[in-house]
Amino acid sequence: MQYTGLSEVTGQEAATYACVGTNDGIASWRTMQNRIDRIKANGTPAMIEIFPGLSHGFGLGEGTIAEGWIDNAVEFWEKNCDNLYRR
Image (cartoon, rainbow, N blue to C red; front, side):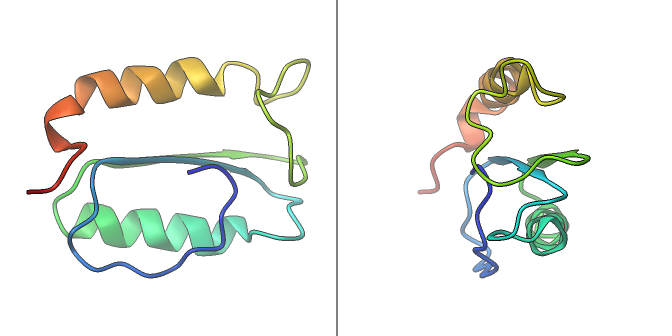
């Protein structure tokens, strides 16, 4: 999940990776951090990367502090592939 304002947590979330910039005027990094914390509290693997100074829409992050986020996301998903889909 990249820069989303979604805050709902149902307890049925799949393993979740998220990333966001601290200057995102659309999706609050604090909202996203809270959601990831709540997902983890339910026992589901979750991770967030928060990039200081980035605004909404940094895409692949090339040439920014977020460069490489996609590699981190893939590594997270590979480690948690058994938790990607809830039954």
